[in-house]
Image (cartoon, rainbow, N blue to C red; front, top):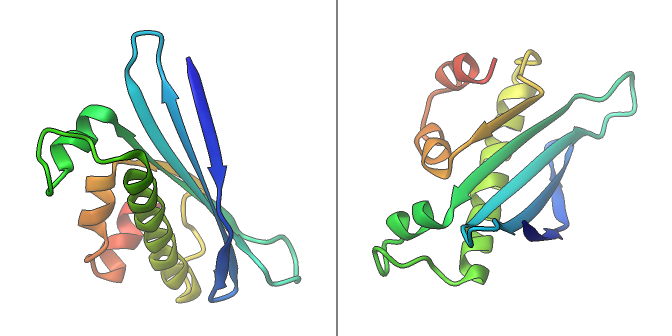
Length: 133
């Protein structure tokens, strides 16, 4: 299996640093896959900072199915990377907002598909809390 990793700097959001790390891999069988791990770390210096991480995983086949511009064809790697990072960062920002409204029992790690994250983006805060315990 071979792969690459790319880290991007994101401006802090509501008292948290956000760090997305994008990885792409190719299995021995030639199957490509992508993951974006987004880590949110509380910047407040008092006590132990809250840290949580969400991983978005996407296979080449899922990318091709989800491509609205050319269904059945995976988007170029640069477009795929930008969309995966953008979605992951938006989701973590939504979770930060929930945490800042008193929900500190958030799961420290979780793995989601991009379609699952998209469906959660429009949820109410209480629904999101239920799914993120």
